[in-house]
Image 1: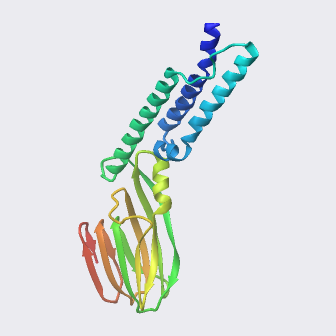
Image 2: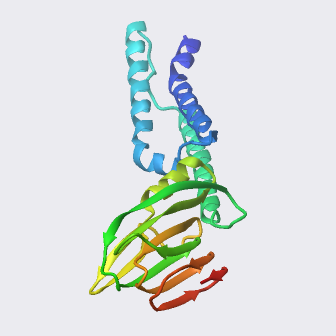
Image 3: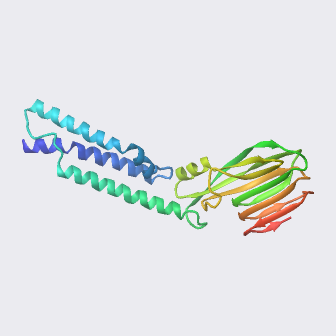
Length: 237
């Protein structure tokens, strides 16, 4: 009788070990899961599994005319707390690594295409270009319009995290009176994990103001006025 009760009460422990084993296995793959985001939304599943196992044990006990089953044991509570603590350690480690992941020597580099809708402007428009990290190349286009293409360079420890950061990071063209501004959108331009290598086409007679933090700058065949403010990187005009 005691051994039957022990086997029945170990159902929840087995489910917990299987569940967390699968999660840790997925986490170790390159496109793995983010524990912090997962448990902030899906932690109630643990309570559901716990309740299902208790109901099963109680139903089994009634069929077998056994007593003392379906109760929460100290071992189950300890196992659950231990697994949650382990998840917390892994999630904290991921968070710390992602925070320092902006260093050029930390994390993996992933590249994603960038394309911004073309914006029609006047031939002599004043255009301000802002960029955080990344190279900027400006040249005249085929007409009175602004076209921005390029690459988003994201540094992260896993591809899933890089894709998440890339999905929110972009560049926008905003009209401000008679002037236009090309600027980062969806992320902080001081974010060290994200870099934008921009290829920008503007009217050849446009006046340009370029403000950037890190990365090379190349401006060619522009007849309008040009003002540049760059913190670092080579400049070729």
